[in-house]
Image (cartoon, rainbow, N blue to C red; front, side, top):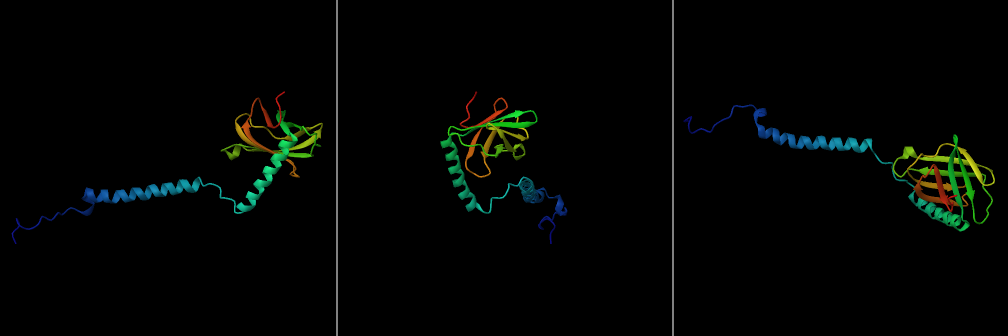
Amino acid sequence: MNPVSSPHVDDRPWYRYPLLWLAILLPASSVIAGLTTLYIAVINADSPVVDEWYKEGRGINRSAEQEQIAARLGIGLVLSQVGAGVQARLTSDAGIPAPELITVALRHPTLKEKDVLLTLHHQGNGVFRGDGALPSMGRFIATASTPEGHWRLYQSGSIEDGTVRLGHATKP
């Protein structure tokens, strides 16, 4: 066989071919990107959906009825920071008797660690007091209700001058 007519045989090892590395790096980078995405998804996982969604849906209808009752009665609640606690004044156009306890939840729209849950005890003359602190400022979604569930105030808003006004509460 003539050395001129024989095909040229490259004696380089496999790792010396640049196109081979290109063929290896493209799928390898996809695997690395996929693993990185998986890591981010696991670390920042959302909370699971409620398993009993049907019961939750029925509860929403019940809450809407409680909100309508509060609107018909003209119930308003003004929350303010007084010292180390929170004071609230409950007003009503219908003159309903004051409950012994009111639960107030101020929920931040996006950050759960900024949520505040307050339990306020009746002190007389429509004044309620409880331990805790109102958020200094920002947007919130507020819910106020009695343990018996006779009425419920629900609205979104912002804290102005350290005061939260819910329902038919008027500015002084």
